[in-house]
Length: 194
Image (cartoon, rainbow, N blue to C red; front, side, top):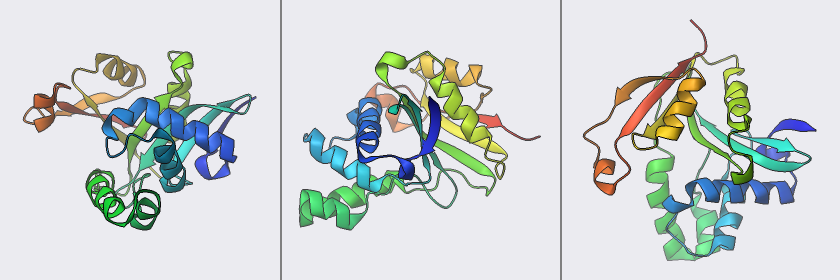
């Protein structure tokens, strides 16, 4: 059985699987704690229940996509939740620092979507799950385009997005990220409607 469900529709076990997928794909950026179980508990509580979509096969989460708009992003490091899990001071710092990136508006127009997160289970990569999730985003009728940012050294991701109809619309060659070894950010856009 193949399904795409909103994060809020998942069972607790499936939410844990989704959080593990997120950590597998983006854990290297989540350096605020080494406690993987605590981070998993955090993500289960801070993922937007309607802006995260999960691809399931046989009731297991094999793909995860988070979408943002010009008004809301799919991950909000809510201060009270961070403080509950990491303590008052450290939780407040985590919330403030992470939301500086994760709550910043990245698209301007009401008709633009931002592909914030896309990750598939390591054993199921290159099997079309990412494309199925991108097509789900394209089916959201109220939007005209989808924007994603990838690093220039991530040629596999660039190729994936090009195969799915994205075109490079901007290269941010003066980015500080270039100094960190990932290359520079590239903005790619898929136009859903003409």
